[in-house]
Length: 118
Ligand code: FES
Image 1 (cartoon, rainbow, N blue to C red):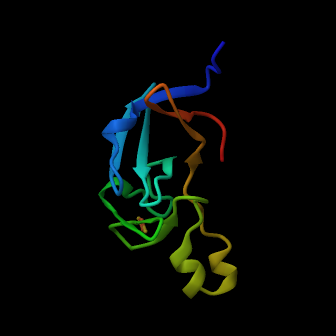
Image 2 (image 1 turned 120 degrees about the horizontal axis):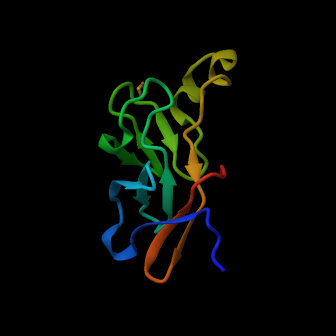
């Protein structure tokens, strides 16, 4: 029996390398990204800083660059890369990461696990 937390999101063939897609599944909006190394990531499309739509951002070295203030979220860890490197340490540690969801490719589909953090 399959795990009910896994949600079918998109045909694997419909997400090309370097592509960012937003899908709606079971009432959730999810950003799917296929990185240059082939890794598929499922993440919240909402920037943790001030809510910008990250699907309008650009991919940059395994991260998504928010189009509003250019915070850079690592798509392997969710970590906010850019301010961590330039902000004072006490401020940088309070920056919220991007929420990521576990993903898998199975039966030609991209799946994400809806309610557990990666
Ligand atoms: S809203 Fe995304 S960096 Fe500010």
